[in-house]
Image (cartoon, rainbow, N blue to C red):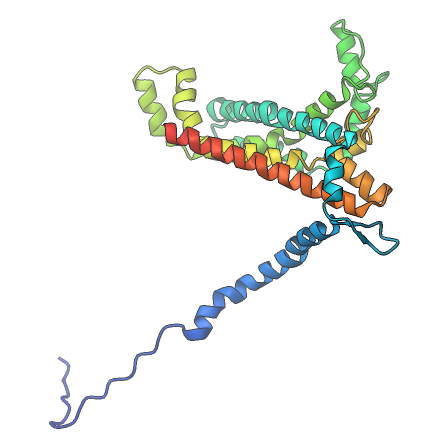
Length: 314
């Protein structure tokens, strides 16, 4: 038993004052930990964006005093045939990555999840195999496919010759160069997008598939009624990031063809590079960069709007 000591009569019991947890230092601590991120963000992302907007309002080459021209660079874009041609090529590339690459990645992920990935060892093996192209340098990928698609000695035309198809000038013909680049991009990014979908598939409860099987639903009905609706957030993410990166594409077409032949593979990224670092028209190049950003932002907004419309209808 513990003895209870009462305070003497007539004396008030003194209670230690309560201190607020944390105080000023406690409230400031999370922001101090976040401060390095905001400093890096402001220096390497926010400042270049604002600086590019300012540069787009000038006629600037880097060798003399800039001349303020207002919105003249943006008005020039509207009548620039090469810009519109580059926009068309980039849009076709984006359509290929969104409507060809993404469905193939989803199909591959569903196939692996349903028939292949039964053991943890197999899952680790296929995850590494699918991610391997993304740790490979795009320079190496471009060199490899330049040999594979070489018109006279490349393996692609050798395979076509076996089945009786005439050899193609994959990267030297205006009609085949852009589809060839899209095919290379599909090979490069198919595994990564499949991993995104695999992550989404693993979050779907298996009880739903078991209930569908008990109700007699087939694989196709299960795919459209269960898999696709529950994968909508992942599908949206893959579509948005494919759109964003497609309108920034530069490395593959530049390394493979330099934008040729006859601008058949000219993308907005290549055109921005040529204007800014070959012609040294930094003001116009900044206007092109802002046009790319605005187009990407508009397309992303449309995708988010359509996603909400579809989600509200369900």
